[in-house]
Amino acid sequence: MSLVRRALTAVVGAGVAVSLAVGLAPRSAAEDALGAAQAELTQLQTEADKAERDLAQSKQDQAAAQRKYEVTTADLVDEAWITDTFIPTVATRGGAIIKARGLSSAASAANATIDHMRDWALGTSDWVSMSVPSDGSYGLTEGLISSFPCVCTAGGYEIVQGIELSDFSMERIKAYVARLESERDQVKALGLI
View 1 (tube, rainbow, N blue to C red):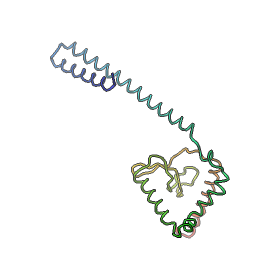
View 2: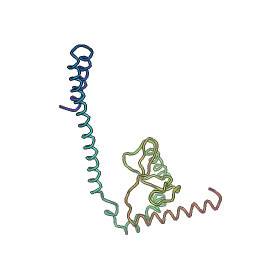
View 3: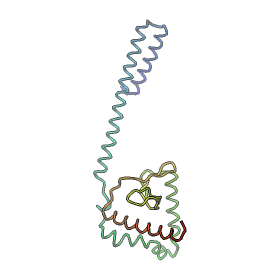
View 4: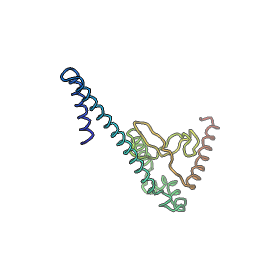
């Protein structure tokens, strides 16, 4: 019998016990019916608790299996390609758009801004990259604005923690932080912040 059906049976049994207790049957019969209903409800609670524990364990097992088979970018892409091709391409993408289209890359930036605001306002089902103030995560100085892996819910965001980064990525982040701190210090020296 399903848990729901058994719970309903126990509740009906408790109702019968109450009816019996108000004078439709001897008190001992009412106490027996109430005791049986309470025992059934206790058994159901025990089974529900076990089902919750089993579900939580199943979710943990699934997450562990997914982590076991996750493939990182470093597994798929040659570091030399990242350094010699990808990074220079990204660094000059604005000029490449202008050259290819004969137009400004502002539309691309505007579209990225729209996507960013949509994710922030409506939430995300997975993490996305967002430029937000650092909370010290991933070695970035607190307060610097940088791109972080974030999840968004109900108009808020949270920086995703615990993503493993390669030594190459950590070196790039350190160089990036040094550049951001230098730029911040230059702006402070001008009295602009």
